[in-house]
Image 1: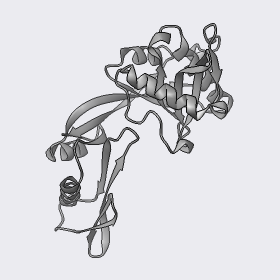
Image 2 (image 1 turned 135 degrees about the vertical axis):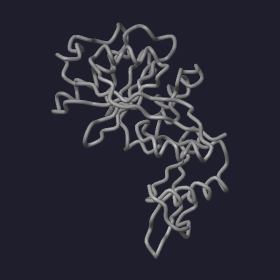
Image 3 (image 1 turned 30 degrees about the vertical axis):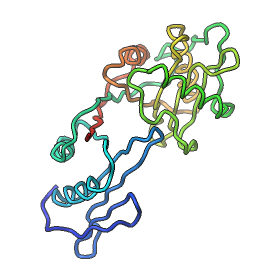
Length: 247
């Protein structure tokens, strides 16, 4: 980003900011409150000074703590946010994984006794919400802030059912270029039974049948169980993202 003279800031919406120079939009800022209440910021600016202006304006009116996510490889953007006072809260590794069951070794995987897979078209929202709250109450390690998005059309959920309730879920964002697994979570009392692996087999095999060759997933660097799960199906590490926080 290069320097430019001070821009004029406007607010087209309550949590949106625009920076104007010579009547042209040279930067945009936006704040989004995720379902768990945390506020995430994003800024897209052509110039360093405009980025700083937008961030300063946003910080002046938004309640803290505040968060943002950046590609760790983008050292300039990371430095900009750190210069505004943000610090690294967590790191997630992005992995690319094949869908072909011959490659992943998931072709013969079946759910453990008493557990059934519920496809995205058959998932019940009430049971999904109940599972989401239960997993949070159990203190799932490195739990993402947006396990369930209220804009459910943006994600598809596959669930594992046992005794009339959901005990595990996999969230998939069906992105055009490469579907993204946003989360695999299993209730504490049902872990180490192969439910996570069965969920992964269900989803990846389904993608393979539709002609999708790869999917992506982000895993927190401290979540050794998830890292082991994905590395066991031939996932390769592609990049990393940082969540930055200002308290």
